[in-house]
Length: 346
Image (cartoon, rainbow, N blue to C red):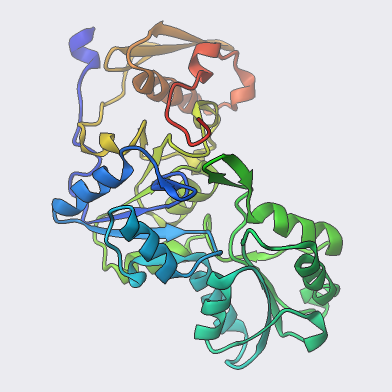
């Protein structure tokens, strides 16, 4: 059985020409780097691969993000950072003429992109804006959310103005833990006005298409820490992905991942980009990943062999996913939802 179970395939990095990485939870948490992330990305670059960054965080400009990455040891140009405000501007440009007044809810990163796109920024609904664009910034207050609500009283289908959200991430990793993200702020406005925003960033495909085109990528790999935005978006765009367990989503989320939110690879941290990736093998009713094995027994998920924690998670995920059944239909041992992996919450 050991010879059968230990087969490996190429490392995830093999054949990749452009590595596209999410930032929060993958490269850094707050101002500090995620352990092993910077060294691993530099190793990828030293191997001749281009590095690009895709972020839903609208609070900073691409230049500010590039400067932060450089401080962490990743020399980066602003045009190597693809932001959700940039994706939002593409949506606005398709709907409104240049020079239109846009009510901005968000920080400098969003304001700069609105102005670069040829629009006029306002913070007041009294200025008769042609659209509202909303993005995350730590300083966003009730006053700004209220101005958005005032401007969005009429649904767009009834003649109201467009409402573009840069992203709807519910949470954002910070050095002190997990904090509310832009999705919570968008939801507050939605609750007030009863209408939905059009989303520009992940998990929608345009931000990925922009990144692939910008880097002329032939064989990209996207690195993310969230299934519902990063991995879902990469799948929608047809880009192979790796979920790295250094950010938001944990083993329990992996086991429950819906079909359209499952990654190509599951990694403990970015060092595993360079390690041969184990091939999951099915033997009878058991899934083996190297020395880890999991079996589905009716409503029960049973551990046959522990192996390494990351291989056990990989085996359990494949075993559950292959059934086509929802996770709530199983009894899952606590060992499979234990979380020995690195997270900024620790």
